Length: 294
Image (cartoon, rainbow, N blue to C red; front, side):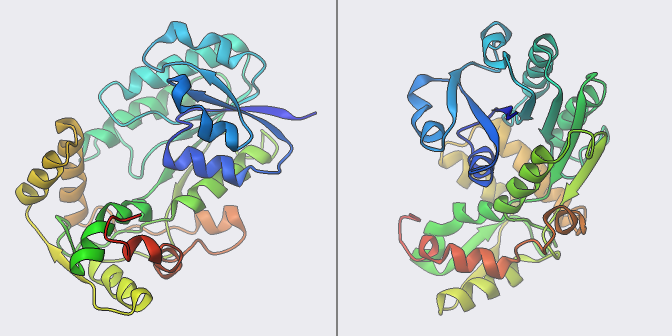
C-alpha cells in the first residue's frame, strides 16, 4: 500500500527538487502551500495540494489526515522553531509515523550563527517527537551561486564576503535525492539518524570561478568584498534585514574555517558520488550566460 508523504515548503527549491526525485515512486504526494495561488507548481509535479500556514497551527490539522511521512522544511526566520513545533504537533495528533526534517550544517546550541542555533532547537524537538525521525543537515547550496548569475553574465565577476573560505558545498538535487532515499526506505532504517550532507570536496570561490570559466569558455573572476558591502547589496535588493544578518553570520563563520567540511554521507545514501561543482556549472551554464540570469 502506498504511503502518503506530506511535503512542507512545497514551493521552495529543495522541496520542489524532492518532488522531482520522488516522481514515479510508489508514494502519494501531498503538498502544503500557504496560498492557493501557489498550487500550480506542486500540482504539475503530481501532488495533491492542500492549503495551510506554518505560522497558524489551526490551519494545519486537515493537511495531515491520512499522512504517514512528513518532509519538514521550515522557512528561515525567527519563527522557525514555532513553525517546526506546529508541524510536529499536527503530525502527532494525526498519527504520522515518520518525520524527515531539513536542518542545516553545523546546527548546534553554540553555532556561530542564529540559523544554526534556531535549527538546533527544532532538531532537539524532532528527536523527542515520539515518531520515527531522520534529520538532514546539508551544507551550502551550489544553487546559491545562481543568485550571482546576472553579474557573472554581465561582467564576468561575482562578489561575496567569503574571503578565501573553503566550503563543502552541495547540489540541491543531491540533497533531494538523499531525502527521497530516506523516505522510500523502510521507516526503521534511518530512524534516529542525523546526516550531514556535503559535496565531494571543500572548495574556495576562486576554484568555483575556475570551474565557471571552463564551463562558459571565458574568464570568470571571484571578487571578495567586505561584510558591509555585501550587506548593502542584499538590502538594496530588498532582502529582509534578519536574513541579511543571518547571511553575514554564516559568511563570518565560513571565513573562520567553520565550513571546511566534507563527508561521505551523501555518497553512502546515493550509492554514487555527489555532484561536483563542475557538474553543477555545466548543467546551469545557460543561467550564467543570460544577462538576466534566466
